[in-house]
Amino acid sequence: MHSKFTDIGQFRNVIRNVKQAAQYLGVDDDGEVMVDRYATLPKVVFHGSCKLHGTNAGVAMDKDDNIWYQGRKQVLSIGKDNAGFAFFSDSKKAIFKELLLAIRKENNFTTETIIIYGEWCGGNIQGVKDLAIRELEKMFVIFAIKIVPDGEVENYYLHEDYIKNWFDKYNVSEDRIYCIYDFETFELEIDFDKVEEAQLKLIDLTMNVEKECPVGKAFGKSGIGEGIVWVGYYKDVRYVFKVKGEKHSASKVKTLAPIDIEKLNSITEFVEFSVTENRLNQAIEQVFTSNAVEADRKGTGDFLRWVINDIAKEEMDTMVGNNLEPKDVNKYLSEKARKWFFKYVDEHL
Image 1 (cartoon, rainbow, N blue to C red):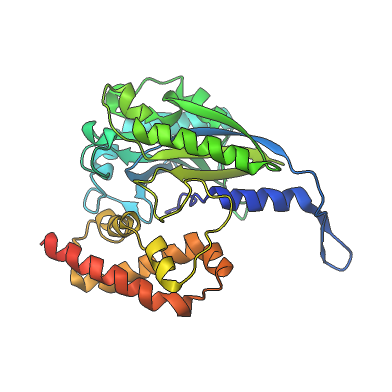
Image 2: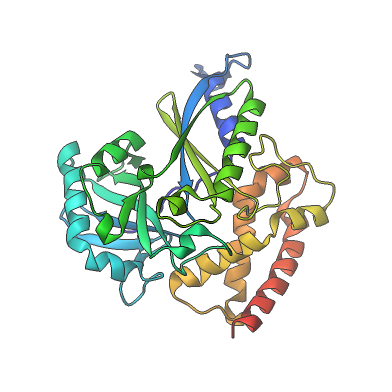
């Protein structure tokens, strides 16, 4: 029943993928991919929304009107909750059912499963010191709608314009349910032949959000924000990336929106670059908090596996570009993460 929300990558990943799409000519009779390396690169309009520092959550309904709640990795229940999201959602079940049925009716869905994704945030759910939304009551902020067709058809997300227009018909703010597009949004045309220009604008916008969170400000609360999530379409393909402020970045990047991989000089630099406080805190949330489990030393293996896997997923291109293989670095990544974890557990006993 659980259907995971798609991971959001980095700007440099989107640059690579868009360039590949622009240069792709198809497959020849021998099955070889044909590429035009001199193809004109596109200009794509991206729309940005505030990235909120909480925990990923979803409300889903299948073709038989069965409704369930989920975190990033598992189905939730009141007995196995994540920061109270299942308890909150079950108390708003009638409202969520109305919203989901409206999506079904408007799109003539009959056999599809519909999942509303959002950030369950506010209060003590997550966040670094001085985060604006920590001053707010817990709330669910919708940012995506995923459609899971019955059968072998690929899953897909409804367009962001649809989400905003659909949500404009409802006023459920008194129930602490919001849409991210009701808050300040951003627009940026990215010329993929001049990505350095876009990089500077992305950094400027991200720093402004980190300095003053637009969502917190909308509720009269001042404080820092996390960053911006950007969505754009090219050749009918959806491209998404995130840019976080320095206080939230999982890696110690030299630039907030890198267009190339970091060039490092040693394994020590890579460990310092990738094993950051934010990544380790994410591991605590993903391995323990989201599963309603207390962090203790018995969970060291699970904690270290998450950190190693996340670094491999997020920084593989950095490793390749620096001629580093997992066997070269995993021992040192684990060593730093383990020391931090033991200290964390001791301090939270």
